[in-house]
Amino acid sequence: MSQTDSAEFIAGYPLKAHNTFGFDVHAQWACRIEREAQLPAAAHDPRIAGLPRLVLGGGSNVVLTRDFAGLVLLVALRGRRVVGEDDEAVYVEAAAGEPWHEFVGWTLSQGLPGLENLALIPGTVGAAPIQNIGAYGLEMCERFAWLRAVELASGESVEFDARACAFGYRDSFFKREGRDRFVITSVTFRLPKAWQPRANYADLARQLAADGYHADGKEPDAQAIFDAVVAVRRAKLPDPLELGNAGSFFKNPVVNADQFEALKSREPDVVSYAQPDGRVKLAAGWLIDRCGWKGRSIGAAAVHERQALVLVNRGGASGADVLALARAIQHDVLERFGVELEAEPVCL
Ligand code: EPU
Image (cartoon, protein in one colour):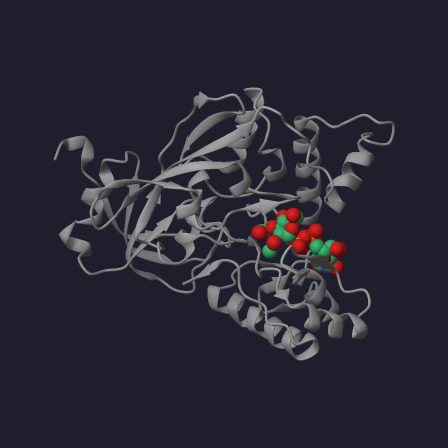
């Protein structure tokens, strides 16, 4: 092994700055990965034999309830470039440790639209496919080409296409079977040359109208959509640097048509989205809000005042406090609506 491939282990590593809830927990060992070649060495170091591993990018979709007795791999791989094009699309690759929002801004600065609806999502490029990030009418899987990941057991680099990633709503192979078995090292996106604005999502359409688009037939360009998404997110969602949070804490639940009809007859203004398979997705934020949880807290763990789907750390909360709040919310929503809410972030 060359010197450059070796991995430096740090004992008792503080994770406060590596999870966006800001929970004050420690990892038994941590290792910063700056080059892909360091991964096999890090995975097979005798000090961590038999211990669990946790891969952290920006730590924006994880609830750390206690110290982690294992190895945390801090993915800090950087770099982004155009890797090719065909008649229909340009292919852009980014290393897993690139901050997502900066990457989106960079693609626009290169004249390559397509990711603008996903502006300002916290976290890294490598985390984006794990939960198939989505917002304002676009899911990452719609712009995905392929990714590369290192299998920790073998040290081999493997390419995954969209089918192998098994993307679903806030879901993928890497959130399930592949969890902590693979470290995503780079992701390549397919940005269509025939770009079309995606501007129908209610909050986004309202913001664009306020910015002077559509009303007089003026179509927004990708930068206008990017700016509008940033404005909407800033107005509704707390900045993790100011108020610890992990974005939406629950998935929007999907119910079958009969359940939906029964619910709708009791709650005529329930917010819902019909799904292609005949089922109906419900706005979890609305359900939680309707149960009176918006702005309420248990200790320092609270429900955000402007978006009931977001749980926040008002300062000094632990992961256990947030989970206790989450359970109380799940209980009330189940009791009142008969609907189970599933947590969206990974809870450890
Ligand atoms: N609503 C309320 N009260 C609330 C929150 C929401 O009544 O406290 C209602 C809203 O008025 C709206 C509906 O619920 O009619 C949906 O709300 P919103 O548009 O804010 O979106 P969401 O369904 O709550 C999802 C994603 C977000 C994403 C937005 C915009 C999930 C779990 N969440 O939230 O993603 O930014 O749509 O596309 O799908 C994330 O995953 O971390 C995340 C922030």
